[in-house]
Length: 153
Image 1 (tube, rainbow, N blue to C red):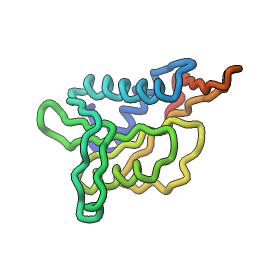
Image 2 (cartoon, rainbow, N blue to C red; image 1 turned 120 degrees about the vertical axis):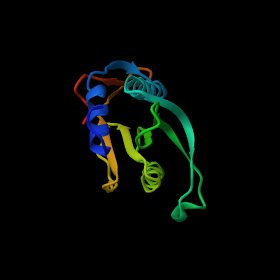
Image 3 (tube, helix red, strand yellow; image 1 turned 90 degrees about the vertical axis):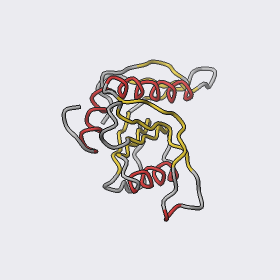
Image 4 (cartoon, rainbow, N blue to C red; image 1 turned 60 degrees about the vertical axis):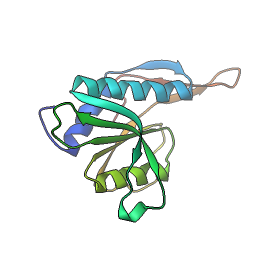
């Protein structure tokens, strides 16, 4: 990335995701798709990707241990860690983990895939990336999800 900082990371990831698409995936497959896609984006920018990384506690959150979906460290050893949560719903705990990561100095990104708006206030230390995934129900009542290019904001 040529820019630095939280906004640059969010802008770059949004641009990457706007080139992605899928059709008729299950919820688990969508989460796996986005997790893998973010890992591909990070690797392409020189980051080492770790999944399900325990988050060190801050003084404010000592009583609860959380795991970040993805944590990125640049291969050069320079720059800040990037912590990412990937969710379909609006999980307050996901946002709390990202706030905690930001308090530790990480860049915090929340990739939320849903057509629904986020009802929680997003603090200035976290950037929300919304993937507008469409959902349909099949004749057998299975939920299927699709993403078209340029559908992430």
